[in-house]
Image (cartoon, rainbow, N blue to C red):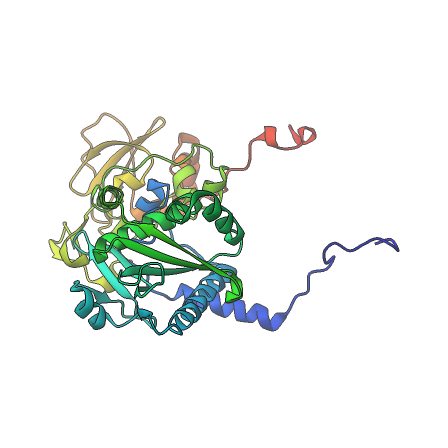
Length: 403
């Protein structure tokens, strides 16, 4: 840097080994958490139906980075702080984690989530569509006698934008304009609590600034959300459309399911990605092959009879068989079979046979099932290296083309 130049940002990033180790521990602890086996009411507003389809089936394990986990931690802390501040008003009645109290007050069938936060929870659609609210609140100056669903959000980037939207659109329309996912979350929470008002407090980081907006219940909107959830959970054989055909679209680029969706990667192997799994009552899952309820502790492990749900394999499905699914990819016919299964070779075609483990660990992507690749892979019993697609050449310096 020349003398006299102003430093607009640090030229050197300072590395702290101790805090780096702290971040590693945060990530390790998060990775040990059990995956949830329900579709969340907080996520149902997600624009991409395909992402919800993959998420409900735990098609790929998401590795959360420390910064994202710490953002959630901050949200929990701000929620507790905001609850404390609201309770400073003598007229406020705020119930956050005592389900018996809420049951007595509202007469609702409410369950508590068995976690450290012990939030008030609700279940729909055979208990496969679940949600947890921050609380129920009564005594607001704006509507003293009305019970509201209470939610608190901490949002650094869009806090000032919410202030502007509320001023321009009015309080009742502000949430829908500001964040559609939060708006739809509010609608389903009002529906399950049988209330007509939602009270959202939004804090800037640290809780030094905050704003609130109230939203009214829309029955038609809430019922459409339930229909959406029903489709995601029970329509097991139909893969929803992509949000975008471009893997570089910003919402696709940072999605944990980008590889499966755009690159035809093979999903994880466990009961929820298996064609034999069926969601049944009480939030449980049944193995149609064994005709028994799958224990929750093995739901994300699976067995050697696993065959992928065809909706998760992006190839042309030719036929369901007892122990196999037959597909066509380009000029190759292939079968995904259980370890003990064999396809019915009634077609006058050569058929490549793969277990789910072969597909996931060796083939890696449906795009790798082409004649030249399969021939070499079989000859050397090799594993295909899964190289992600790069941006098109026309987005890169023209001088590099052809090198």
